[in-house]
Picture 1 (cartoon, helix red, strand yellow):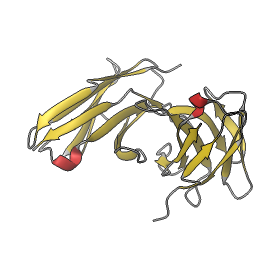
Picture 2 (spheres, one colour):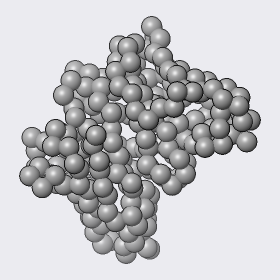
Picture 3 (tube, chains in turn orange, blue):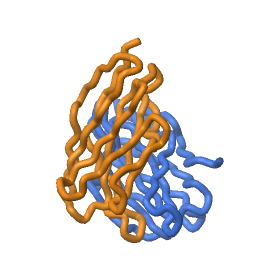
Picture 4 (cartoon, helix red, strand yellow):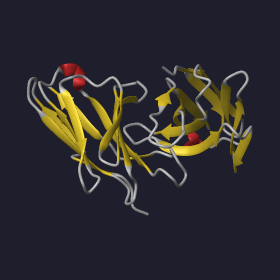
Length: 114
Length: 114
């Protein structure tokens, strides 16, 4: 089955600096890669996603890049703010006809230092 | 906009008891997923249903069963509870045929087994 690795497990950055989180996946058939933000005890919230026919996607301060050949994708957060502090999970699935489970990475705890 | 609803939000049970968790997907969503998240861990896929039929099964113990009803709500039944079943249980829903595989998570049920 699919295996998703995520690095780093913890990341501390100064407010205003950029943060980068990286994930690799094992199944070349995976074609949908969402990123979720989870605050303590709360639900995972989708912040951005990318599909395999696209190499990069941006939404304001958040961007995701995908390298299908190397089977890795990254989350970039620019101009970080204290409210960006949370655990971030990458995930992968084979979105062919829908109803495909997500396989999550192990998470990155991001701390923004004021 | 309507979101995924889960009930109860908190549940405390004794070992060997049973528990039933309920999930009401976003209206017109046809697929429901169940995930289990232990403390400090990533969400692990348990089971999914598409149009009231089981579509995929993950690492779900034989003590657990689930179904999706005609109104698309889903229930996760857990029997012979063990201490290790203490976790957050999330339900997610998606709609095949629109933006396929975008899964939206409910607020979760925190199950504590004493």
